[in-house]
Image (cartoon, rainbow, N blue to C red; front, side, top):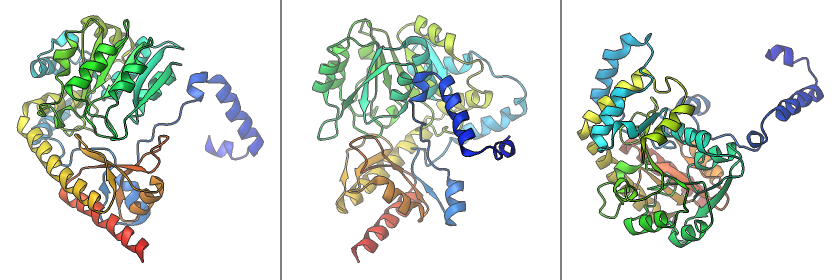
Length: 389
């Protein structure tokens, strides 16, 4: 097909593109493409570096638990057999892990799959959605895909949740409220008091979606809200999203889950969920991951220690670093972040330059292992030193 297109002139190609755009839904035409970042292989091939420090996707530097690896090896011979479409064994394991009934649990191909289900099942054109800014892009993209109107609530000057701004935004009707806690990309944590105030301010007939992708990194903090307990006292429908991609080290297998207020919410999501959305290996790996609690403890300990080191060094270099309760740091690099990101690529370091309005100078860098973190810090210092000459 590519060779056939080569014989068309530019006007023909433009006409074909415009024709396809006219066929597309208006809401789809206005969407941007989600930036999933660069792969380590592509950077290594382009820049010829010996080692790539991939610090853009908030992956677990320890990888998956050895128990997961063993379970996958044992299950590999069943690859020709479809997975359990209901993910029954995984949902039961999650029920035992969380204390939430299996009928109140939905699983997805990553937690973004559940975000997609929520948009498909609940949002109509013109519905109002309130979400955080800056934030995980799909909190905004999926609602806009359905033609919803999205209200963005920014963080305050200290880059923390602006609870008063949330209360104001929620004083008018909304169909859905979505925010992450701790937040991504900032890393700030909404404490118990702030969480209760925002939940209490939510309009009637509103669905609350709390994204706790980084839950494991701050669940032991005494100020972190027990969202399941607090939400259980609310009359509104709600769902709490969590993932195996971060603390459990299963990002490549794509497993997320939602803990819902009522089985009927799960039933409605099942109506728009694709069949066999969680593959067999992913289900097996997630069940095994839940059994190795020590691996999660070790992962969090490594991240916490390395995060403190990186934050201190960045601050010593004069960068404004937002307080983080997750496995990444968000800092103001004092220039267009894409420029610095491109310079770091030549040193084999991948970070995520932020592009949301007002944050074009900010970078999110994942907390990796000691080697990758040192490669990032040393490369950054070399760039700054060269500029100072």
